[in-house]
Amino acid sequence: MNPRNPDGRRSAALAPLAVFALLAAGCGAYSTSSGRVDEALRWVNVPYLENATAEPNIEIELTDAIITALQDDNTLRVVGPEAARVELAGRVVGYKLREAFTSATGGNMQVDEYQVQISVELTMRRLDGGENVFTRKRLNGSGNFILGDGATSELTARGEAAAEIVREVLGLIVEDW
Image (tube, rainbow, N blue to C red):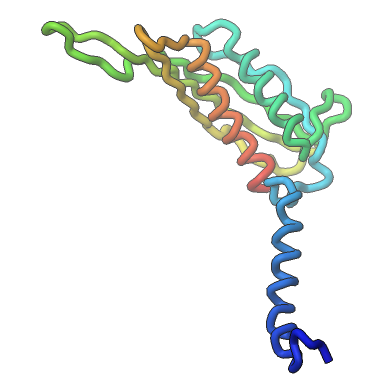
């Protein structure tokens, strides 16, 4: 008999809570991916996106950002075309720079902030002839930059827009399979 718990009831009541706590603590070490990635599709080739816009090099920036994110996530392995089981390909279909916020100063309208908007269409196709994972999926990203005091740059806004697109790509590929 335990002198701190003479009738043993408290131990029996706490046992399920202890098991739950151990299981919950163990879950913190896992990745955010669902683990539902088809083993046969883990090797992906990511060729440079096509650029259907007038914005130079945007396709290179986005492709590099997607590859880096896939490598950092470590669920899929980015490989060359000869080793790949799937291919993630597409094109940049939109690049817009628009006025986001304006203010009136002395009766004149002044642009204080601009927004970069980027759109891509991606297809992830199986190279074994099976059904595509997804086809012509349109993803959009945006980022703002400020003029004047506390100024940021268009390059910073492009990075924010690319980061949004990359998060969506990871969501499509890794989390939702």
